[in-house]
Image 1: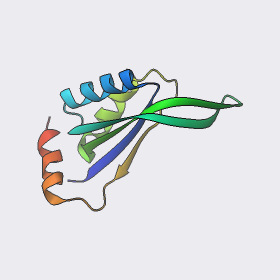
Image 2 (image 1 turned 60 degrees about the vertical axis):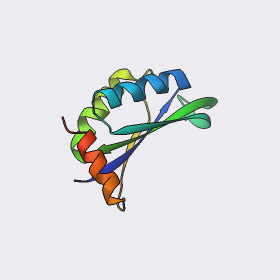
Image 3 (image 1 turned 135 degrees about the horizontal axis):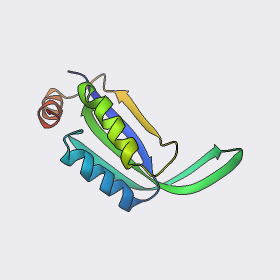
Image 4 (image 1 turned 180 degrees about the vertical axis):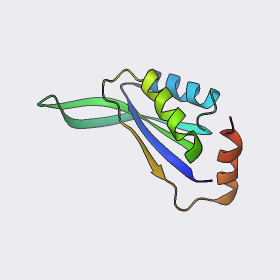
Length: 105
C-alpha cells in the first residue's frame, strides 16, 4: 500500500473542520490536521489576491485517493480548490499500517 499526504486549502477554520470531520468519518482518510492562520497570495482571474485561509493535511491510502478527491470537491466552496496529494516515500511502518486499517472501505 502507498500512503498519500493530501493538502487542501479552505476559506476558514470552520469549513476546514467540517471537511476534515466528514472525510475521516467516511473513512476516506485516516486522520486530518487543521491548520488555521495561512496567508495566501495568488492570481485569480487576472487579479492579485491576498486572503486568510486554513489548511487541511490528510493522511490516506493511494486506493482511497479518487474517492477522497471527489468528495472533497463536493464539500469545497471554491470554484477551483487546491486539492493536492503527495506520495509518502518514507513513512514509519506502524503509521502506514494505521492508515491502511483506518481507510478500509
